[in-house]
Length: 140
Image (cartoon, rainbow, N blue to C red; front, side, top):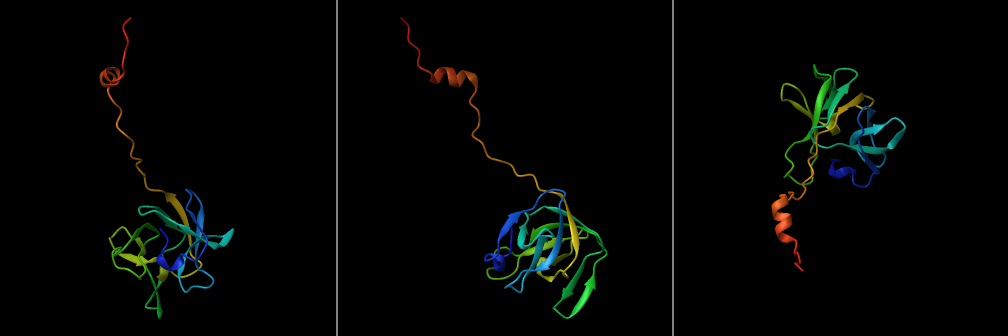
């Protein structure tokens, strides 16, 4: 996911093992994650993506004070996804607290530890008896 306010920014999915940096994207007031090699491209994550920060996570509380968590690991997710026209992307910490991605202080580095498992829906296989019964045969 990438927040609604980043729809005008080039994006790509996160990759396991890559190091990302928190940044504000040009032409927006929104913060997010980018690769150091591609600072203008927002790196989008699926809910459940696990991140390890190099230091305790820092964030701006209401754009005034910088605060710090006691955590260096978190899981990407969304808060209040049904509420339109607001930021949803967040990092959830082991104690259940979270910080909106757009509140993260710029310049923090995080490594993508793990991507969530995505199950693909496939059609159930037919048993052999059912396949054979459905195949017409000729006797002759």
